[in-house]
Each structure stands twice: as structure tokens, then as C-alpha cells.
Length: 184
Length: 89
Picture (cartoon, rainbow over the protein chains, first blue to last red):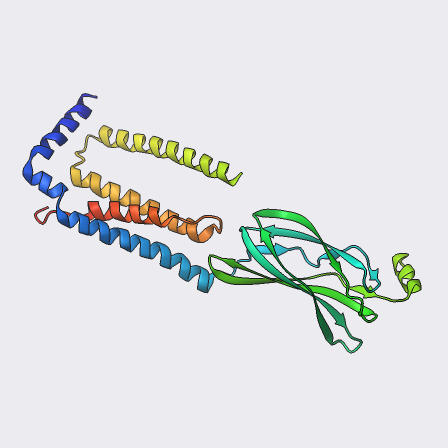
């Protein structure tokens, strides 16, 4: 305690010394402070920016795939419920475009946009979301699946993530539907 | 919940800083070595610079954390202020 008081007294004595005071409050210190602040600010902004723009390959929004759907067979105009298990490491806004894709007999895909909507994402792990889609009434019979492209921004850098659902069948025949639902 | 985490990290860091500072000063006093003004200043510069580097790394590694530009600026100003030396020193 004594040495502490002595040190403080010495510091006060030093401050009374004009030369020491000139050193402490020298104008060059202000310049150095400004240069230091600008340098740290610049590096603190540039280094993470370069990293995130060029080297960062992490996904900040993931969805367990394939996305589950409530049934195997639907009729046109019916409502399909998709169960999305989402993990997000960030919060913000996102935009999703969901397409319904018909797989032809020759293996080609025929795409139709099913929905396009904005939504919010929050930090979460394994969050389960039920999303309903009304199937278009003009769908031809066949095997389909859903594909979505989600676009969002992380630190002002655009990112995209896509998911696909289980495949399902559109059938106008009620008999076919009953057979599928009974697992026959 | 994340606000509570941030508060907990702040309190823990505060206590760790105090305890480590106490042990460092205790070690220095016990060694009875003279720890002059510029040695203390150099130590301060190193500590602040290390804290800044850690904040930069966390900025890169944790997507949920972003160091405030104000904090970068203050740390840089402290280092710059103490970095200056009179010509005869």
C-alpha cells in the first residue's frame, strides 16, 4: 500500500515536470492515436470482408434433406404439407422460390414455380416448420418432387441454399391413390 | 438468450481480467525487478493488441459476432497513443 502511494506521488511529481508533461500531451501522440485508430479500423473491416467474400464456404442455413411430405400420392389442386427441419446460424431475411418438378418418363424435368415468398430466419437448431403448398389444378399425372432455392444475405454477401423434397405422385385416378396410400 | 450469454461472457471476462492482472502484478512485485514506465507501456500495447487480434479472429470464426467499429477504433487509438516515444527515449 505504501509503495502504491509512493508510486502515485511520483507520478504526480512527474506530471508537475514540464518536460514530462510535454511528453505525455505531445501533439504527435494525437497523430499516432488517429493513425492507430484508422489502421485498426481498416484492418478490422478489410480482413473479415476478404475472408467472407473469398474463402468462406460455410453454410449458415441448412435444411435436412430430402424434405418430408405428408403423403405419397396427391390429386391436382390438393394441399401438400412439407415438414422442413431447419438449422440457422444467423438471423435476417430470406427469399425462397419453390418449384414443382415433373420427372418425365425419359428422365427430363419439367419445372413450374409453386411459390415465391419472403420469410425471416433466426438462430436455431433443428427447428421444424410445416409449410403448405396448394398443388396447381392443371398438373398432369406423374412423378414429381419439390425443389426450393433460398437466397439470403450474410454480411451483405448474397448466398443461396437449395433443398429437394421426397418424390410424390400426382394421380387423377382415385383407385391409384388408394392403392398407394395402402402401400400396395 | 443470446443477450444473457453476452452478459455472462462480459462478466466472466471482467473477472478473468482482474484475476490475471492481479497475478501478473503480484509476480512482477515478487520478482523485485524494476518495471519502468516504458515496460508498463509496452505491456499495455501488447495486451490491447492481443485483445484486438482475438476480436478479429472471433469476428471471422463466429458468424453471430461482429466487433463494433468503435471498439476497433478505440483499441487502435490506445495503441497509437502509447506507441509514440520522445526522440531521446
